[in-house]
Length: 337
Length: 193
Picture 1 (spheres, rainbow over the protein chains, first blue to last red):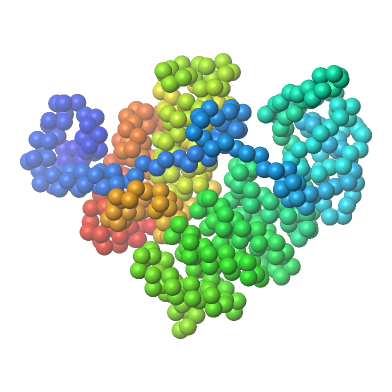
Picture 2: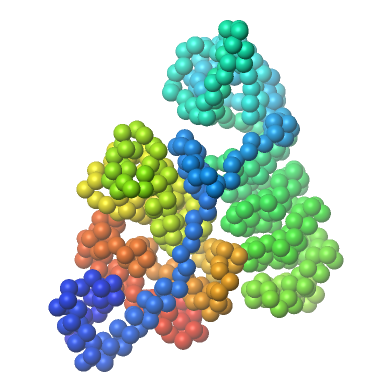
């Protein structure tokens, strides 16, 4: 009995062929002569084989890009799709809408330098206070050109400077240019439904390529912060609908649907996004979540005939995932008992 | 770079030259991603794990002394990250459909993947989630990464004997979940989850 017990404990080592030849031989001999251990061994072998059914997944290429970007190493493979900077006007149109704060100072890479913020009543930027410097407008924007005369010559705090470029536009004059990306830590405070705050939140949710560590945290935050309340800006729901349509990651799209479910009012745009997700999303779990969200809309009297048609279509679609079909049928049953 | 071994690459990194980062990533990202994905049953978290493990590898390169394999060191960082992730209550996933959520879209599979294989895959994923995190960590490192009990013990911070017990208990649970007839196995899984 004790021998059987010790034998069973070594079965995993037998499966990985980690036992020495003598012990392996003795184990197999024991298995041949002990029905109970043979049964146990065959079961473990079968479980071990079934475990091999899990496919090896390729990590998405975006992880490597993010990793190399974070440590400041350029991607060397030539078959990688190059990153194209978006036209400035596109970014600026988003950024300009986000936060424009008069007063304060912009100061490249200098966390300990002051930014004086004139009160706007809607939002403010907090920086570590220090000696005052020349006031300048502050906006969250991608690029800006600053005269060296406006930069404090004392660079403190070892700012993280990347993507450095040097240029001398006109060799005949004394002017040179040094361009770089620099990380700043900016805190924006404002009321939940302040226009700038809402748009900043929407920007964070929608721009997965510029967010770290994960944009789904933004969605979690939105879900917790924007409680079912009629005063919640419809722009938040629109941003979530956009995430549902465009995000490449199914986990993020699922969170977007869950957050949409908690929104107080549902616009046509949101309904369409849910219907589109149910119709086209490649991940069955997202489609299931979309069914649930549409069913919830139905319960609150916000469902239109297009959504009901889509639920019906999904419930009857032969090549649809069985879980999605079942959930759609259940939802229809609740709508038309 | 690909002619250099892990230790040589890490020495270059320790000297302040990060150019081997890409090569090291290519060597280990697949293994790290699959381990984290199977451990956490969450593709998004697995992505975060991979990124953060490699960033940590670079930032703390001097903590790698070369007396252990680079793979063991990387799996130690990964396992720590995954344990921390699971400790956060919000990250516990229990719903049945979470299995579906975590699976890649069908388009990511080859066309030859049969429905039966997909079903088995879901059953294995569910069965793995029925294990304790310690058992899951041990069996994943043993079954899928081919690590020795000594290496797993180093990663898990326990004795080899403890690893042996964890792997055995894990296999017993998996046997019950996977080798009963489908309905019985599912019933068993539903009972333990």
